[in-house]
Image (cartoon, rainbow, N blue to C red; front, top):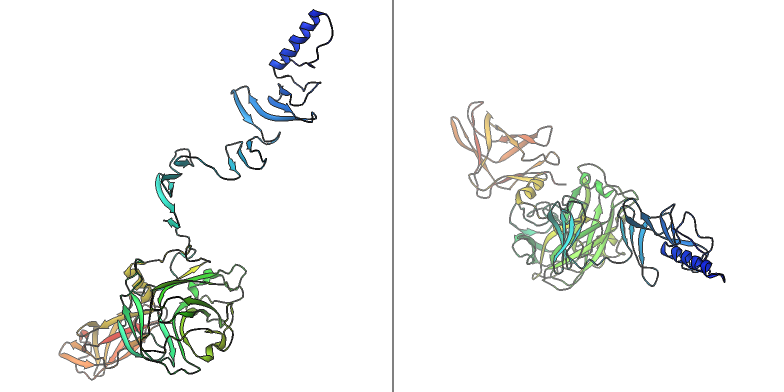
Length: 511
């Protein structure tokens, strides 16, 4: 260890040799010492034996810059970004881009990290990593198993959605408990696809069916079809939209009425008979508010996917109950009653004039057919490339969700309705258990002209077609009194069965 002023004086040779040897020793030991040399030079190296810091003098020769700490015990080097931050720092010629490795191993890269390899290991046992085993594909591996992958425009096995369960029920049009088709529709009703009603007036006459015409390669097997059989005579109040109503308690995650209210994205596949502007609308039933958005059909009679963004409602209200919270409404005809104002594209108090402005007329010809499937409503704002995939449910799960609002008990001839008992000459009693707790105490739905017969001890085949329902306190079952002129002994038991090919009996708790 030595320090020297690196000045060789004009002196006798022995002293000169000693001076040279001292200077060489200082160079050989990097001017090491417990404190900095008294004489310094620009770019001079200095090793501090007290702090074990290797330093270099700056160009202005007014300070030392720390290069690294030499760990004399472990014979290792620890690089410094500054005197107080132990970070390995690599800067490029522009002085901006850098790679920094902090004390403890944290790595900071200001631009990109090019490994020129296949795997970036993220944990000690190497079972969590990012790999690029094949060209144009990145795999995310957790616990030694590939959990997700990324390719061009595709993120596989990662579903980025806030609503774990689909908000829309029967969006794939798989369930139609009431019928597979219904003719002569001219007014507001629900007839074929479960959970989907139509609001109609002055729109002509239509046939609604369950159809197998679906967009190719999307995983759908059914669509809702509307076939115009009598064209409309347009009046101011002409209206035609397809609607699904949603319980308020199923929408509390939207946080409406607060600054944290969520946006919504609607997506669906549509084959419309008309190009041009169509209207999609959300209606808040609890405070009579709505928002409408226009979208464009580019090609008539062609399956097109539409993705529509709706704003959050920071001042609206959705009651936390089993009532009508929100309606999704897809318009296909709007008379001047609904088009004379300005399209309401933000949440405001509902006004007829602002609801369907710009909607093309899809009811002007008997050649017109409308087909719809794949309806989904997602929390958040998405576009056609980022929207999560449609949530395909099993048929059973889909049916169970529909049963909360409607279930068919009997359809067709000679089908058993339930066990029963003779009560009097005018009453047969029976009990029906619902497959799932219904939204509310349901109403009895009976096809006109349907009749039933009972088989009872001592009195076979008594026919009747009138039911009086006495509902239990909950929504899980009910008692029925079947009114008929029958004979027998009180308490006689038997079965009640359908007696008509068109026999239909169900229970409805629709909103």
